[in-house]
Amino acid sequence: MRRTVYTEDHEAFRAMLRDFIAKEVVPVYPEWEKAGHPPRAFYRRLGELGVFGVGVPEEYGGAGLSTFKYQAVVIEETTRAGVTFGTTTVHVGLILPYLLAYATEEQKARWLPGFVSGDLMTAIAMTEPGTGSDLAGIQTTAKLSDDGRHYVLNGAKTFITGGALADLVLVVARTAPPTPGDRRGGLSILCVDTTSPGYSVGRKLDKIGLKTSDTAELAFDDVLVPVENLLGEAGQGFSYLTHNLPQERLAIAVGGYASAAAALRFALDYVRERTVFGTSVASFQNTKFVLAECATEVEAAQCMVDRALDLHDAGELTVADAAKVKLFCTEAAGRVIDKCLQLHGGYGYITEFPIARLYADTRVSRIYGGTSEVMKTIIAKSLGL
Image (cartoon, rainbow, N blue to C red; front, side, top):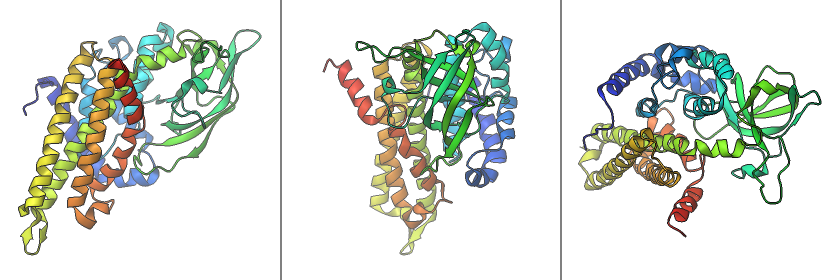
């Protein structure tokens, strides 16, 4: 089906990215996988290309465009090539909305120029050992000093994407104890300079997939965080976190659709070239039927994504809408990629083939940003159940 969600400007951006990926990313991607992340200079290169600055106001060095569609193009093009841009999706898709919505003008002037250039990379630290999706159970504490000049941060975080290389980490901490009637109260977001004494990076976690996206454990031992680094108001952290969930889940949904589309393309190329019993794999009826099923699921996911992108740009994407598109697209991606890997036979299990990387990379999409089970719960509530 012909897509109408993107303009000529989006497609020009796509063409630039596709060329850049082919020339500067694909040839060196295996080196990034071995290292566990791209070289730091790569993020500055993305800054030069304008990837980080699309949604940043012009006064801070960005383009000032209030749309998510350029970020969607980045997700689609990297996935199409079977690569990632490291932690770019978190940097732009998760962190930037918090800074734009809740940072003071002084904070924006301090952080956004470096954010745009790639000189200041960011991460967000929510999850703790033992808490998982239950943010109300956060144990990391930030106590205001007697002179009121800084917070004293203590605790630990895990599964932090970009945590190993970040320069600024948005840490969710408890600045006040919860009350019996409100377990979610008392949470705040502190922007922590990773060069601060007492801040340390623990284990770099070895994941099944997403090998170029560094994931780490963090620890805070009496880290002094200036009160000027409090994001928004103290005690409002939980409400801030829920504010960006629709966009976060939309980004994951776009990745799900793009992964399914890429898997279909990889499988089509493979079955046309591969011969079995003297004939191409593409000529077998089973191959045709399987790929017909996959193509239909990809089209359905594309329609949901495109509708959600338009709704999001119009400010109308609801929490339930985002849950539906994430649930459908990530589950569809799992089905499609599995079928396309099967058509590759033994080669589908070899990591030098992009279908194998897609298989490993996509599995987490049904977990992070809210599990599929959480999405179903949200959808059920929207139905009055």
